[in-house]
Image 1 (cartoon, rainbow, N blue to C red):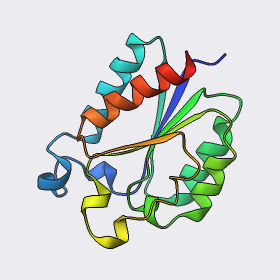
Image 2: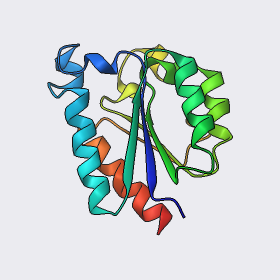
Image 3: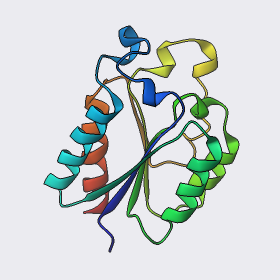
Image 4: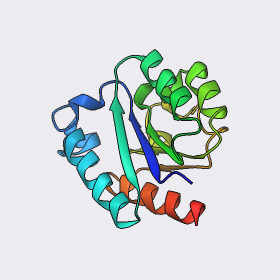
Length: 145
């Protein structure tokens, strides 16, 4: 069985650290990915990361992960609320699927309350800042054990 986690980061996450730090914190995406990788390694997982501002890139990555990755952890950013195509791609992935958010979308603007991914993932982790990434690794490890 594969021990790879595909970590997907959606639009604007490449701006973490400078974009709305009062909401998303001061850590950069690279810092989150490094921390995620260290946590994954402690559970004997490898991590492949892709950040894209383009929906199609994320969909293609999900398709390519079938039969390769054991799990997908996705912070889809704003695509969470709008992309039924990404949700369809995620539904076709046979491994563990975890949706994460640094902030708590349910406590924010009404348009953020909808997650197109919620119905196709094993679970969602939101509102814990950088800890959301740690909790996602732990969830993957437990679901695959």
